[in-house]
Length: 133
Image (cartoon, rainbow, N blue to C red; front, side, top):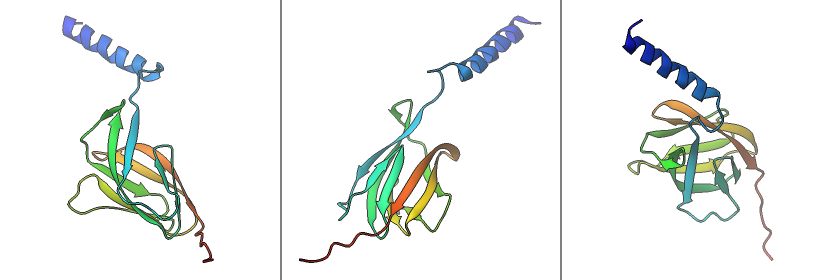
């Protein structure tokens, strides 16, 4: 075996070892900044989204890799289309609109440059109407 082949084999072995060691894998996340002020409580976070049905909110969303901001193309895919709506704001790059369609739960898959990196649980809560006094 040549020296280059031995080095390549050692390197590949280290990569495989890195995959099973804690703290050695890539951590993905999202950073949200609300751009609108919803009339009811909305929570957008990488560990979950909570939004009432009938409520629409716009947010700037930035992908994170090991805590650092990434410039990868970001996209969302819904497991159930009738629960949560999500769409990019045309011409704005990292801005998206989220809206609650119908009360229920689903998951939102997140991709960076076409690679699925996260799945976010979504809870769309029933509409709440405050009666006028």
